[in-house]
Image (cartoon, rainbow, N blue to C red):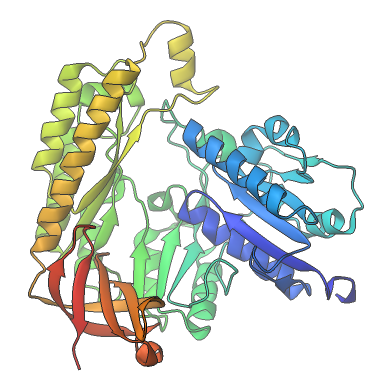
Length: 452
């Protein structure tokens, strides 16, 4: 440990909540070995960049972030990890200033970071093993990390990988097949987070509905976690086929599992869903969402949709548009289709089995869905004006002399802003308080007043 007592480490994370959970795990492990945690601005001997490769845009953003960090931190060693590192190590190795590229498994091997920092490797070090070669998923739990100064919300990894094989997706190549952490280990980590002062735990994974360990499933795990001394348990993105009666009944009757689901749709056209190799149709999706909203009080449903999937005709787009209009959604995210190399979709295009949608048409459809999404979010949020909601507050920021703005989230994931005297910071940050919602801003954030 003495070898590392003066070593300083910082990290930047891009992409999904699972990446954030894993970054925090790696940082916590390094700190236990004597490393000192720093922010990028404070300077560090080693900077870890956790990348994403879900789209071309995500890859570009990762490259830009890496190059920017290298420019502003010329004395730091740079380790690039994550899905982009797993899929395109040769691209990252060509960036001057990158010292190491560590893939899906290798990013958890702490000795590599020691070697990088000490200069015991020939740059760039490239360690990318097949994603399915290890027996147990690394326990991705979040403890105090460089990217968060408060202890409001922590990400808890319960599962990794995916067996679904959607035609457009690179996740099986980047993270391997579905596998789950032991239930006892997850519960232990949750208790550690609770004792560290966290108020909310977000369960993360690639396909968390597929959690299964020695005959147990997600509902069994949730029942165990309800006994942990934590205020909120949030389920991150979950596939539609796992939103069944058992899960809905459990959430409806729980005082800790929050009424919020993010359920990817991807397309509102059954023809496109079949081409994507998704495991549901629009009828099933609608019934699952409607069942959740009808049975769970204040349930908020979010989703993801992909526009411009190769072969998506205007009729397919219109079906998706009208289907989204009918769904009882709180919000949705829109993505332009990004054809990833080596996927079934890429091979279909190469074999002229599917035809890409013209870029101008994709832009038109994208804009139309963005506007529809804004309308849906506005309609959902405005119903809360004049109501009282419990808000779990996070860190504050000054907005004018003597006044600070605090933000937090309701159980169903509505962001609420409150302005108050800076001197009351300790009574807000990290606490769950009753707030009267007074207005809805142009930014679609709710504005409120803390009730005494």
